[in-house]
Image (cartoon, rainbow, N blue to C red):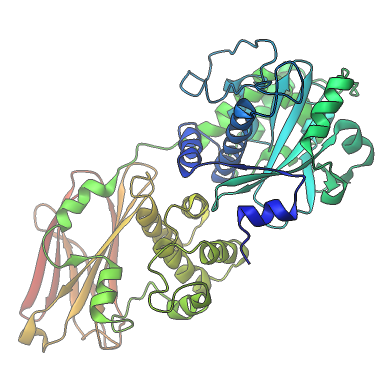
Length: 517
């Protein structure tokens, strides 16, 4: 059952609930899109942290129940992130009295978020670390070890922030202190985190403000750590700069890791080198290419299905997707189960894709995500991650096409269009579907994938030819159907401006179409 904000407020009366608008959610997404990150997991982590700190500091800035003279009063804390959002990231922020600012500086945040979860906020001598999470069922506050055991990073308070991206609200589930985490937290040697169970957190943030007013936080005494030489740091940065879909924080002993990232210069160099590995190459936005399809009869797959009636058109990209759709009908209207975005279904599909390794299941799930995941930023991020990490061409292709439906301007978005070709008596009244899929590649080229299917029968007629001709009308790729072929296909890469012609031939009948990338 999906809980409304009002329901959560009733269930957790002592916890702070803060709403944010879809526009603020989108602003945080755009902020993180403008910065390079080493992989999609890092970018998503940065997005959650950015949205979290934006929302929390904006709330503190506008909270009318606080007063400047009292730590439980108004306008005590003012946001720095929103005011600095249009400044260059390397612009240092001056720290006025009684202003809450991100620590150490706004421009340092990407180098933190690229490798570790959490954002530190400072108010005079007090520092708190915000730990965002998307967990539906919050069970424990898990703090990366860096925020506890690195002397420069250690903070007085650690705050659990639960983000509901669909409903646009943030739940402050509670906080704990440095001493509680360090001395009594459950330490996990696998992922190097300290954890405090949800039931042991202090839910009411007012307790923290009052405590600070009565007894301001002293300077923390953290055990000194080992140091690295410049040569050792250079060697580690080179080692950890290799492309990985995860943070390298667990790839070396923690003593070396904390010594490396605690040094601002070395941490930024590591961030720079890792983000260069994953930096986007010159990409092609395929929206303009749609001009090639503006003539009549070029349609999307959904339009073809609606016109022909599912499942009369046999599309080989799919593996019993109607069963997948049926499993979500209980979450949608009976008349049109996928006429609008359904948060519960989208969440379930995302979870299915993340936890499942079967291509036969993931392929239709990825396709369905493109149909119903509109405006869902997690769906967009997941599709981009699949494009970057999977080695399966079909999954990658479908992810790019689904991404193109959710975010057409995304540099990795693909395009798919279908044309029903009817040569009437020349093909014995048999229609075929000609499908073109275009996917932008990392090196700036465009992957072109062509397929021809039967529309109603199970197999293509034998000896049907699919030909690709170059600008001199010379054949450079060809495929021919056999007795029991469900489809024939061709695939190649081209550069922007390349010209080619596609022909579909059966005996004396033919169809031809010229394309320019």
